[in-house]
Image (tube, rainbow, N blue to C red; front, side, top):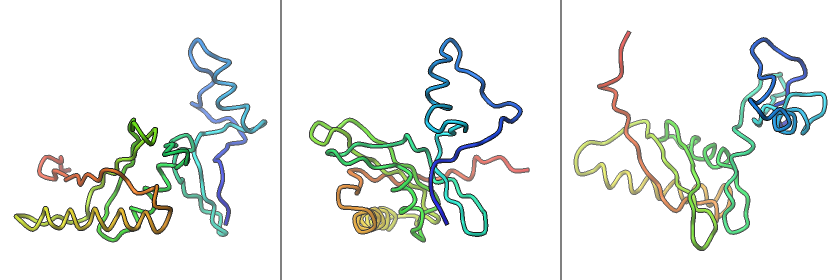
Length: 157
């Protein structure tokens, strides 16, 4: 069981070989961080059985009042909640903290009618508390947005 940067030791068909008009940037971004390996920019977790799980972009960092926080770290906590299907965390400019954080998530189920708003507010508060406990108080999002999937417009077949 180990976590770290996902790096690849051999070239593969279709891999990037340069950045148009900026080969130096290509070398600095993908080949210099881990000499002899291609750095993908992703974090990974490898189980003792040899399975890999991508943990998110290593460069998706939000700086909140001097605390560097990965968006994937917060999303991982939120996605473990039984009522959450998926989530995304983004940063935004904040006058006092430097950057603030907004959480958007898709619930597994929705409740129609007047109970929906109350349920969404309760779930948003639960998620903020969960993030505060699992990571830190500063990691709790400033805003929580519940998104709805529109399954009626999803193509079938």
